[in-house]
Image (cartoon, rainbow, N blue to C red; front, side, top):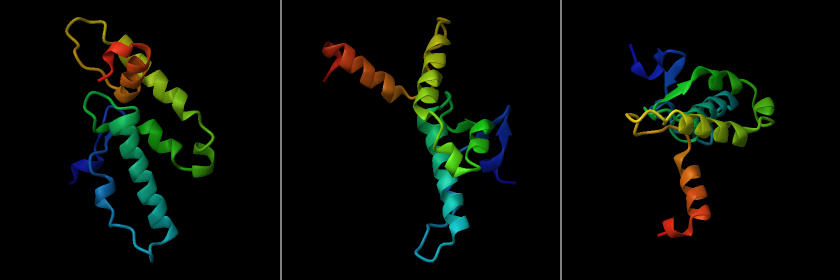
Length: 120
C-alpha cells in the first residue's frame, strides 16, 4: 500500500505526487496532461500556497476544485491564499506555537515592503 495517497482528517499527502507520473512527452495524451497538471497544482497548494505545518498535506476540498479547469480558473485564489495565511497567523497566539502555515513568502514580502529596516 502506498502512503502517497493516504488521507489524514480530510487531508491527503502531497509529497511526490507529481513524481509518481511519468515525465510527459510529446506523445502524451490529453488525459495524462490533465492528471499531471492536477498533481502539480495540488503539490503547489499543499506545499507552498496554503500549506499546513507539515508542508506535505493538502485539504481534500482542493482536489474537488480541480475537477473542472474552466471553473477553477474563475476562483479568487489570491483571496484564499491570503485568508489561509491570516487564519494561520491568528492561531499563533498560544505562546507554545512557534510555527505557522500558509504562504510565508507573502508575509515576508509584505513585511519587507512595510518595514524597510527588514530588507537585506
